Image 1 (cartoon, rainbow, N blue to C red):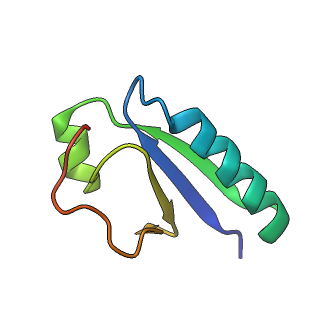
Image 2: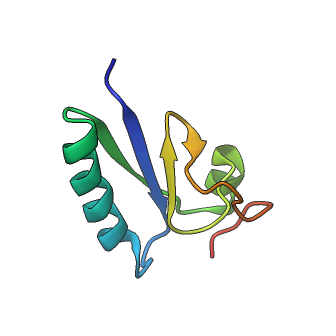
Length: 76
């Protein structure tokens, strides 16, 4: 089974590019062939639909890797 990772971020997020690079590097070492998808969250409607707590957010198989992510949704 191929692992699926997502990096969700807002336009202009100063940490998005570094986060994507780090996720790709770690995935290449620990789960070769893993799918790393970048998801741009542009509107509050997108944030609500995705349950997006803030930028950037990293998810593995749809679950936030942060054990205690911020509550609510937002674009910040």
